Length: 78
Ligand SMILES: [Zn+2]
Image 1: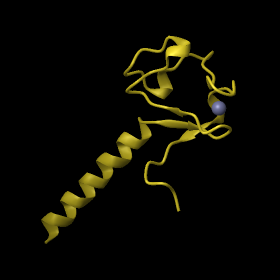
Image 2 (image 1 turned 135 degrees about the vertical axis):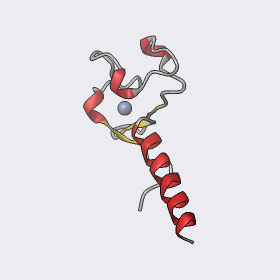
Image 3 (image 1 turned 60 degrees about the horizontal axis):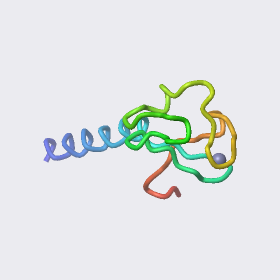
């Protein structure tokens, strides 16, 4: 039983870690930056983490800067 709990915990940690390196969402217009896809508007190559985006990056939809982005919660909050 203990083993099962550890597996569960590792699984959860993995998911949390990928969430941190994962999608970011613009809190103004809800545009989602997906690192797997990059961003054509700014010539960002697929596989670029949000933290690695250049300083000039801004939301392609509303033009707000990186500070407008929050971690995207795929679970849907609450
Ligand atoms: Zn936006």
